[in-house]
Length: 244
Image 1: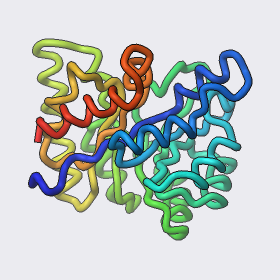
Image 2 (image 1 turned 60 degrees about the vertical axis):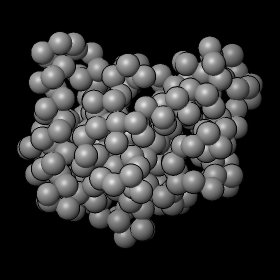
Image 3 (image 1 turned 90 degrees about the horizontal axis):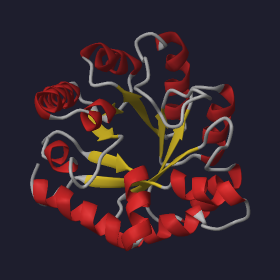
């Protein structure tokens, strides 16, 4: 990828809402965080509207759609409720993710192969509404094949396993993600990646030439406590650019 086409950074603002909801009220405001992120160099904003509304709420989504001048990526489970919300608001993108009420955060990739029949209708309706569809999957050829058959234009690879291991195991995971990105790109699918990425581990992922976008949230919000959200985003942006 040439220097004129840098790797995009999507900033997930869910955990600004988590902090707000811990005490109730309106502070800190996720929409304000999204605007700060845009000013600091984010190329897009990601928000996950969960069934239990544990962080992002419906009114946040309405205000994000109204205020943002950069693309909004709505993370959503494959439920009728979330499909109706996406079709009503028409964000730039919708990333279909697995969702488990008991989980603290998304624990793995979507089983696109096992859910093929259910996902076919979701993907079709979102595409008809001109919403860019992404599937959050493991870097696994079987899941990529399902994405190809579903006609999904984008896949986002779950990098949680890469982030959790070290040494030779991390190198193995890195190769798995790189091979998956190459396979997706070869078949006309735009590959993204995210989950668990930090200042310390992002460069090898960012160096994978086929990857077009990284989505990072929890780490950046955590770092914002110490140095400010704008500075944490600019530092991440700089590391990603250096990798290319």
